[in-house]
Image 1 (cartoon, helix red, strand yellow):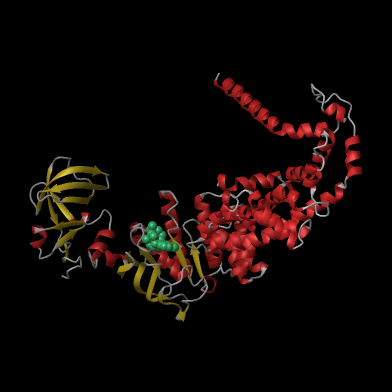
Image 2: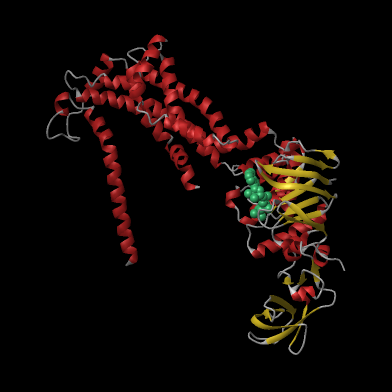
Length: 334
Length: 276
Ligand SMILES: Nc1ncnc2c1ncn2[C@@H]1O[C@H](COP(=O)(O)OP(=O)(O)OP(=O)(O)O)[C@@H](O)[C@H]1O
Ligand SMILES: [Mg+2]
């Protein structure tokens, strides 16, 4: 069991308020990702849940029990740090066994649990090494091993993959997702990489300046962004925004069209523009188009289209794929 | 070709290094050699390097004229005593400043360091008078107190820098892993802090052992350590180079031997921050 509830949680460091007021319900077994730009308070929120930081106001509940003032050790959560934070003076075995040792588990139980964790994470051959003798990916796995042996109520991850190279990051992403399926334990995962968020999450919390902009499934966020911030943050490449007269025609202060929601034609369409750069990847084609009204538009089409730099194209947004926003940036329904 | 040059360079660099090391070590070597000469040979010009008649007579005289072992045990008592008390005060102090710093922590550290900028002789008279009135002159307790206080700023600083190097993440990981405060200290903090504490301890013993200003001014006989023992041979009424050298050799031998055996720890400790 591991449901987590935040009830009007606030956090200030001295006079600076980092988290003005957050309420959030995370159900048992969910994989929840916190995303947001750098400095928006993701780590702070995670550390509040972990108990490594004291709240300035509000309540935190785990499985219905108020843990607002509980020591981190009493919350029965496991955390994987960005820096891995392995114990440098202990072997891999010692690191993975540490949480069980703290629980006072028997030697047989510890050996069995460490063996299992090592087998799951491909660490069996490294159990007697010190952390400094491991590669980044192996250290990462030790950190995860240390987190899973104890069967915590929930896992907290703070950008665990950001120190790994791209290929390893994709592989570890899958491993963590598989681990979640296998264990079924609640996971909270912090990242500023929206691809990680979209691929791993059951639910995404988009944070901005310490506020929740939207909380929902990845596809909800993609297809029904609550505001311009979420619309711009989720999706890659970023959504195109058009303001002014063109937007007014749609009855909005600004409209947004995702790069993948244009049809491209060489003869006719809603907007005419000149291709600045064309990137041909084979599977996709990216066009960076300067429209007649002066907007810079990114276009993504699947497959290859024979368009070169300097040519004129006509772009038409697909039906029902134009997002409308009012002057405050809120989405206009319908 | 490039290989040859680089080998030659390596030889040159090694030669220079050895030369510098020899220059630094030379006074100690010379003292050691002189201690085996007669007073006559000791002042001979040109000096003899190793081809002289080696004699132990200086050591015999020194042993007859003064009680080496009493001075030695006084040095041990004051150096070890002041180090233990110093660490008992400095570890919690440095700990607090490293792990729960406040706005004033930097100021406190600077203030402590600033006390080392005052020349010791500037407070000699008041301290002497206080010691006289409290009957602390020529006592172990008095000497331990003063040695502890003069070295405290340095060891607090040293420990503070070591503790600062311990990543907070690791301590937080221990908390997440279910360690309470006591377990965190026993299983995680202490093992990581021990190397730093050990080299601080060694350095403090060396500093206290070699301290000459206060030990000479505040002791006469009962509590006088080895520094006083050496000083008693540099009398103005005639220079006894050979005996002075014998006394010096006897006085620095213990600390040299200790330094030799702990050099790995010392070097590791002193360069800890630089390497990381
Ligand atoms: N101990 C602290 N004292 C003062 N300010 C802090 C402290 N910790 C964090 N902050 C501030 O709180 C804000 C949020 O920090 P936080 O680390 O939560 O950001 P983040 O969303 O995790 O960013 P990133 O993606 O860069 O890791 C930042 O502006 C940071 O400067
Ligand atoms: Mg962060």
